[in-house]
Amino acid sequence: MPVPRSIWARQLKPSPTLEVKAVADRLREEGVPVLDLGIGEMNPEIPVPDLIKQGIADALQTDETYYSAQQGDPELVSAISEDLARFGLSYSEEQIVVCPGPKDAIFKVALTILNPTAHRRRLVMFTPGYESFENIPVLVTGELPVVLPTDSDFLPDPAKLDKLLKTDDTIAAVVLNSPNNPTGTVYQQPLLRDLAAVLSHYDDVAVISDEVYRTIYYDGTEYASIAPLLPEQTFVVSGMSKEVSGTGLRLGFVAGPGEHIATLAGIQGNVSSCVNLPTQKGYAGFLRADGDFTQRHCIRDKLCLRRNHLLERFATAAPEAVWNRPRGAFYFFPDMTAYIGRRDADGHMIADDVDLARHILETTHVVTIPGTLFQRPGHLRFAFAQSLETIDQAMQHLGKALALLQK
Ligand SMILES: Cc1ncc(COP(=O)(O)O)c(C=O)c1O
Image (tube, rainbow, N blue to C red):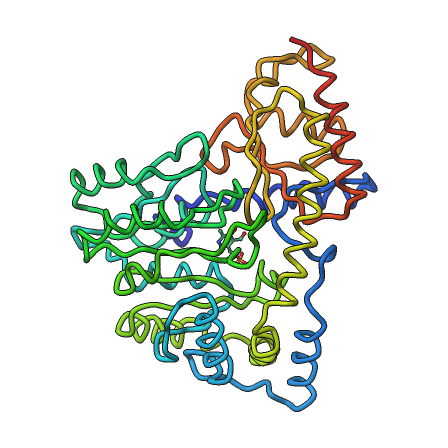
């Protein structure tokens, strides 16, 4: 008899964005010129700042390749604490843990606060939402999250959350993600205040505030977080992946209430030991040097240029789509329902967003991610951290792919 697999691990869905990346990579290997608006990363179009590269190289040269403290290199933890203060968040060094990537940080928060045998054990996620919020609680408790759909502007409704918390006493945590993946929506202060007012009645319910896009706001929209409103309940997660284009460098962090963070540091020490030290040194040097956000805003401005470029061309390529202007992150999530139910040149019916994404990929080699994978069918996600030429071509191709569809 083969060794059985954990029943919880067996329930896990594959990461949809990484699956789409595999299809795009395969086409590339076959020599097909793929226009990839699928994967949510900026590299190589917008590279990691030189200062970070230099910091990492220097640490390697001076043999700083040993374990750091499990909580993180003290130099980095102190730089993160100072940097959080620039966002109006007050966290001492004891309230921060550095993890191998934001996803890992979310997982370790879940391990810290979710208990499969507790009455309150379930996580709430708003949809459309990031895939890991669906999968991580399954690994920790065996239970899928409770899903609350957002409104047509992709904003959560505090009244719906209130109703849920009043009627379901199994809820242990609520995840908020702003700026949002996959929609680019930003939760502004009045909404956060209303959500905090609801959650403040449940001081044993945690909030995971996923702020991995915390420096990527457009159109004068400003950073806002629920953390200062609920400091004893909130776990702020961020890291290098999106802020400095460091997806492959694997550095994230969590800031939260001291006792829980001490537990989380213990999990980190047992599971990962620490994040590789050169990367920690590189990020520490960067955060100290970028106290005025010059470099991070430069990345944001490059992304804003790409967003504007995409929206202008998308309007022509897909005139029947319905959409909101993304105010943050680097995703665009239009409603493509108008194109669903049409037939392609071979007479095949495009039954849903998954079919539509496949049709666009197969006919014109543009990679997008179907909204179904983020629990909002009828939509497609376009990640726009690509060159202006790629965006131009992708939108021309998209226009052609959509024009092939007959009502
Ligand atoms: C909202 C959100 N949180 C967390 C992550 C995780 O980042 P990483 O995969 O680099 O750990 C991502 C990545 O796309 C994300 O979009």
